[in-house]
Length: 314
Image (cartoon, rainbow, N blue to C red; front, side, top):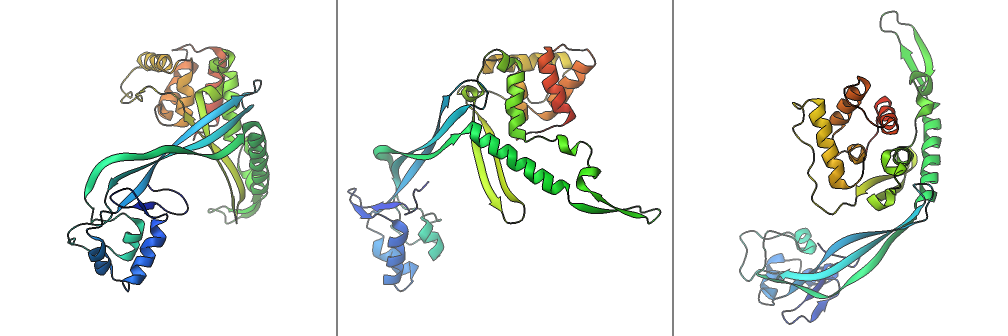
């Protein structure tokens, strides 16, 4: 992966920098060779030039201020390590010449000579974002409610296909429970606080980090949201092929899942995340709890029941 707004660097076989911006350099080379890719390749085929690429790694850090589960500050910091592992230009004429766009990107079918991958210098660190999650959540929730209010006031024409009668009705009146909808981020934090995890003192920011989004659409207005990302570092397998298991076996599997994660009711939040645990498995657990086949702590049952009444996810 290449790096930065200026494009990747270009170095020679001895590691000397030929260009700080490969994209600008290749454009000048194309101009110098009258736009001929073939001439450019012929001129540089024995140069041994290498493209300096960047391996990015995003780190999350949190400062937990205690109290409400969203009362923390999250920092996102990119670690960027330069490396080389191939020459840019082939030493023999390729069977298919790249076009100018492919040549500018540095990625094309005509792979140059491979070289042993090596890193260049120490990694650089770049601050991406500092998010006061309590402030972000308050703004996101207010933005969500404003959009819901606006959308709920929209007028629709409802027509009876049998009688031909019609009426004008708002989206709010047409949608049961419309005004009870909550922003999903608030529900995630509230569910955590009410669950066995929150009641046992687990802090959500020690178990999850949050990829935030804040953008404005010309038609629908501002939208603020996040996607939770788990922080476990051990390999955790998702629950698969559980359709034929009875509910007791499924509950046992979910208990084992919690043990691997390290806290109770973890499976619920991984289910809301929607990857390792599936919504169908959550629905089966709710049905089993409601029918008395399994017993969940009352606070966890209430969290699961609220989700069942109005499902959300990421």
